[in-house]
Image 1 (spheres, rainbow, N blue to C red):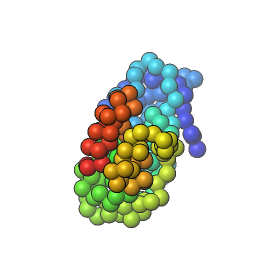
Image 2: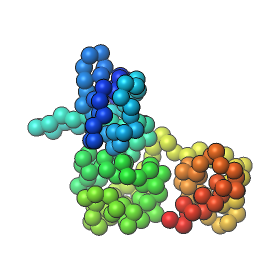
Image 3: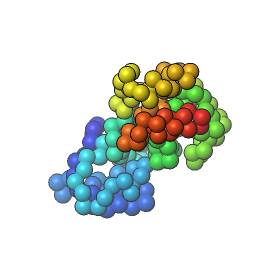
Length: 183
């Protein structure tokens, strides 16, 4: 089993990239191929999927994406080709938040995810999702304190804070966090 491939991005196509590692070109299906640039040296975290008629690589820019992908493909009825568009269209925090809040409407916006599969995702993964991109919140953080003071739950606040642009002022971060909380 492969963990990652480090190499030069030889080509970027609409559904995959080709990574050259020591003269071997690996075709890797990725959620967003255009996040990679031709000619750059990069590490692509990969999952090798083997079936009796096919062997494929699925790649990710971050370890957190790969971990979420692995948890998604363990859901009954959800294979690797169905999990990729979920990662392409949603953020890790948004997907985890939707699953933990049982937000079926959010999950059903992804291709080929209907009501039955959205419910299965929630049933299998609610409260169980863990990725290396779990948000670590400094509890003296002003944004965190403001949201807690407004009555939001600790778990919800930590989920949203990871998606807020840290370069903004504290006031702008709070406004952005509140917009995300309402969604």
